[in-house]
Image 1 (cartoon, rainbow, N blue to C red):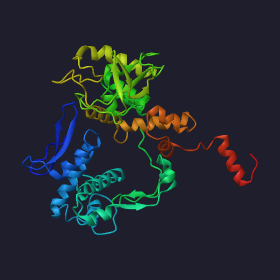
Image 2: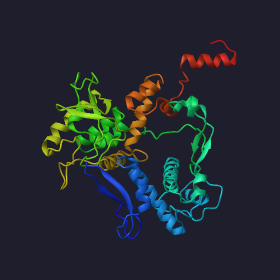
Image 3: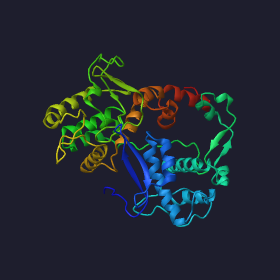
Length: 396
């Protein structure tokens, strides 16, 4: 079910910017801006965090209204009670749950984002002198670990690290990303209805493109031949460029610099393209795109309905994958990011668990993160078997 605008309550308001992007703030039922929320959200102007924090913040402000708490009166205990009410495990009574069906409690990642949002929001306002006791409670420090030093440019001179007392406590356990069901790709390809949908399945399967980056591609971003004019990759590839003014509001997660010069794109995130991806692209362009394209220059378009020919949204692509998975009888819900996880795991296996290769292929931010999440020993490799025999005191 599509979400509708909330009336009679605090809500998030989206506003178009002159550069084609959008800004987000929190408004009251009468349309007036919540000055506290707006002042904090303005510090994230132009970043993807602004939208995310706006929705987490409006949820907290609604809870705060119910509890009759203000910025000046809120305590660290109150904030921990809120974290407990939305799903965190806290060693104190927190009252009735705040997120009740059909809403779900926040998961581990969502709790971390909520904790970061709340700490930033209150420290922003405590800096003006409001609620000094809360500021002391939020500005905790701890000694740096070796991992902290490794992540820092000048880690050898670190003496302390900031701690968020609202963040959920958890050990450094290996995460288990949600993969696609076995045999998902051929089943999905037989269940989709259009060449466009088949191209989306193929492109997500053979690359590590995120759905926002795929939905935001323009035709000029595609360099589907050897030795393209950009000179940045000798093999067929695409450039994922963050454009805040995309008509379908699709946005790339990462925002490296890019430029268009003499009709040639350079920069952005570069992803290699497989022969199957090129084949599916030409099938889509000749069968469907040529009939409905309207000159906007974006790759994915709507093929039916009153907006036929207009850019296709990332949400529409998610819905297509969900319905195709249901028709194919695949277990669970097929989500675009599962393709990225599955392809990363396959690249790790094919490269002998080399996280640097997987990082470069998928434009991941850290090879260490890739190794922690996807790396695993080959229990049948000669090195693994020899190590066990050595420990057991046996001859190989």
